[in-house]
Length: 189
Image (tube, rainbow, N blue to C red; front, side, top):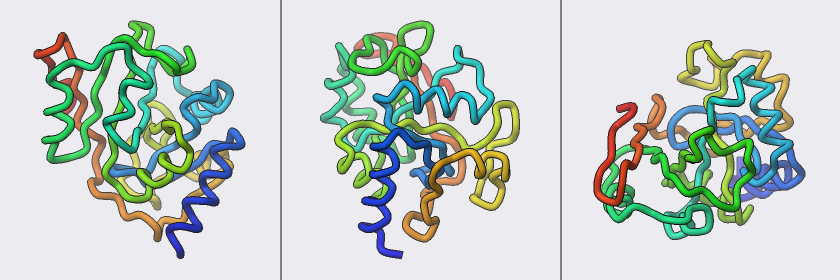
């Protein structure tokens, strides 16, 4: 499979409001255009997830954080640069994203990916993508494509060819919440 062709094909689906099943830098995820409220609602429906549980978004580079945040904590830049495994950060002061993507407390979870497929897909789209585990809420997180339920697979619009992007880490990302410019707490290791 040609990775460039697969990225272009996947991007067309995402641009058209589709929900995709794709390999991320951690586990297989459900994704869509993070600026499309209707596509985000479909992900909540597929996961049978309550709306108060937020989703995270993926960016291709940290320099794009100011497009979606009013303020980036000073320590964020060092933490992003020196993270030795996929790490999702929870930020306050969200802007330019749909309300159904923002948590009730006004925060958003963002991970800057290093995975080639995800980086190139996001770059081609020119906007972030949603990422959430490919399972029904409350069910175990699938560690591989073969563990994803047929129910989930049958509800997405497009499944990315697994050959284009092996996952780096087969467990969910570390999650860190910023308290202020210099303090944070680890939510999940």
